[in-house]
Each structure stands twice: as structure tokens, then as C-alpha cells.
Image (cartoon, rainbow, N blue to C red; front, side, top):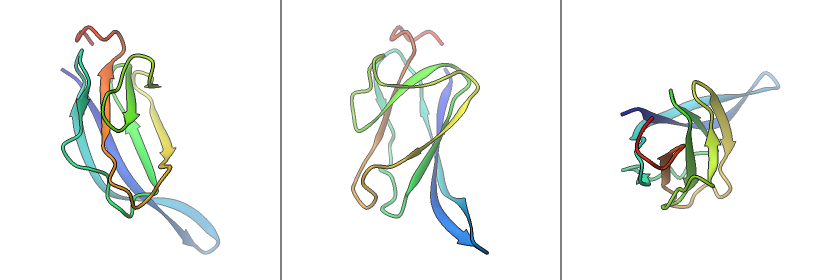
Length: 101
């Protein structure tokens, strides 16, 4: 099985330039049924960076489906969290919903 890697970041400003500073990473196994990360996002998280070796779908909260937002195979996407400071988990499911990646 492949893993979705979730890297939590905060936005910092140095010399007038903004950049992402990673604060924590966790992995969630990509399966045919929705799997939820074991840890919620940190309250300080402003941006999440998601990457996976195989195409998968993810969702803020439980219950990812194949209609949820996609992470293409081998790509990394950055997503600004909609509500920093809230208790939010990330769930993931493989692209086909069959468990085969």
C-alpha cells in the first residue's frame, strides 16, 4: 500500500518574502475505503502540503470519496487550510475506491 504524506506548514515572512516552514509530517495509508489520519492538524497550521506516489482523493474531515479533491500520482499540492485553529483531520481514499493503487 502507498501512503499520502501530509506536511503541515506555517507561513513565515523573512526580508519581505513569504515562505512555508514545515512543522510536522504524518502518513496515511491509501486504501480502497476512506482512511483518516491519526492526528488532527495542529492549531497553528496554515497550509498543508500533500504528496502521494499514486493518485488518490483527500478531504478535510472524515469520509473521503473518489469525488473528493485529487492528488495526482507523484505530484505535491499545497492547500491553505480553511479554518486554522480548528480540530481537523484529513481522510484519503485511492483513486478507484477499490484498494488497488
